[in-house]
Image 1 (cartoon, rainbow, N blue to C red):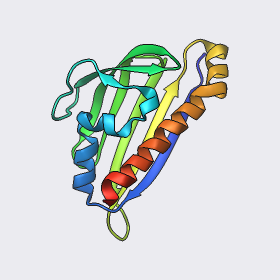
Image 2: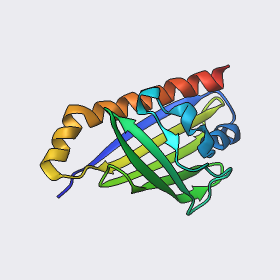
Image 3: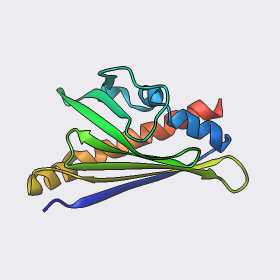
Image 4: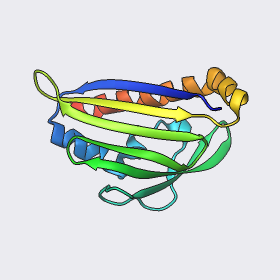
Length: 153
């Protein structure tokens, strides 16, 4: 049976919640938030506005291996949260919750919670231990740095 893992990140952003939510709810901004080593490209242009049921198709390349990834918007509470789940991709299960709230003292408190399972049982867990965990940390570290740069200028 696959083991469920969780990655959680919280970031304070010195901009109004509505502005931050609008930026993250635009799939077109994914390329600005994804590190170059992932080599992400859209397989078809993303929609201007996300809503429940929206599918986003991209291709990623890691360690010389290309793979398709498709996510579906599962929930949308405009200005507060949205979530997406993998439909096609490398994980057995992937769910990403994006939450936005007014931060104490102003600005926005953004919280990401990724829940995932890897395929291949013990081999998937070994891959997680050897590289997937560090890869996800590097991707979300980059995302945090880009977010700081985008909203602090």
